[in-house]
Image (cartoon, rainbow, N blue to C red):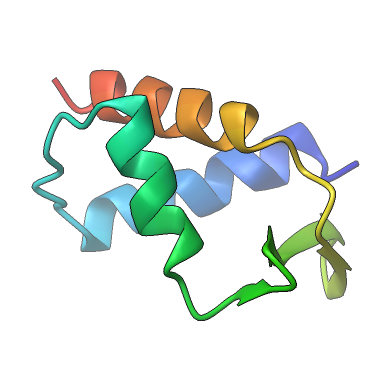
Length: 79
């Protein structure tokens, strides 16, 4: 629900200040790393998502495949 223009602005700012050197990683390994994160509770990953400016929402029902695909898309955009 986050305004697309606002989301692109956030991404643009982050790209200016962060130059990540991300490794190419297979899905299984990615999932293993993800499940060791501090946001994991009851074998679910808790995410804080922005619905709009200043309106965060905690969600734990996001398909991990979507997270991996988003990571892959971001990784490819860096090349």
